[in-house]
Amino acid sequence: MGEKILIVEDEEEIQELVAYNLAREGYQVVRASSGEEALRLVRVEEPDLVLLDLMLPGLNGLEVCRVLKRESSTQAIAIIMLTAKGGEADIVAGLELGADDYIPKPFSPRILLARLRAVLRRRKAEPVQDDTVISIHNMVIHPGRHQVLVDNESIVLSATEFRVLQVLAQRPGWVFTRYQISSQVHGGEHVVTDRSIDVQIVGLRKKLGSAGRYVETIREVGYRFKE
Image (tube, rainbow, N blue to C red; front, side, top):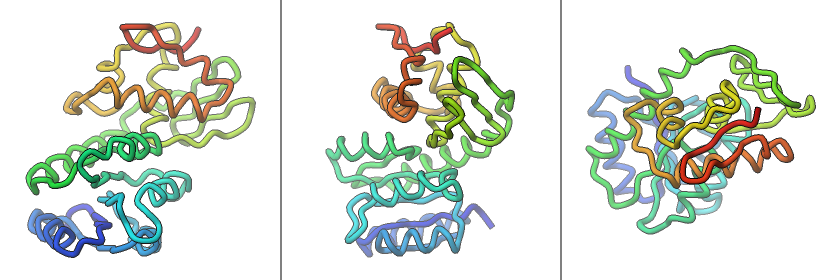
């Protein structure tokens, strides 16, 4: 059997269409029609990826994403957001919370499957990353534990934010372009935009608090971690 996918979608026709196409490709499919149901099923079914509609009754998709990325037992689960056309603010908010990708509605099943496979491939490749513990300034980065300590206090980062920090901190003083950061974090197949990398940097700095000053912007080039 293929990977397990949780579809969180309250529109029955869309849920049926997505479930049919995923099952035909060999994926295990679990369905939820509300945010509350999604959180319950995540803990029971332990999916590999969540296809998460943002416009849900009750607990909306952004709130579901926030809960999943806040809890250590679920923060490693991949999330692809299904968004309304033109919902840029929601897309940015979801990426800041740690979502892996987004697909605007209406979408082609072929596009959805391609983006889903790309996210799952990137997740499978993650264990080959360097597990060397990095100690710099007042910060300790422990890849094996997915742990960041600032002044001995644990900082909770999304999987993408953690990888961005790891890439920069491994070579302090070295300037990375947005493309280089994206290639090392996501793999060469990922379509990089200035906005997507900038969003991750903004979220990372915010969570690091005073230590966020170590992530420096180099105008018209990219970013570096302060020596």
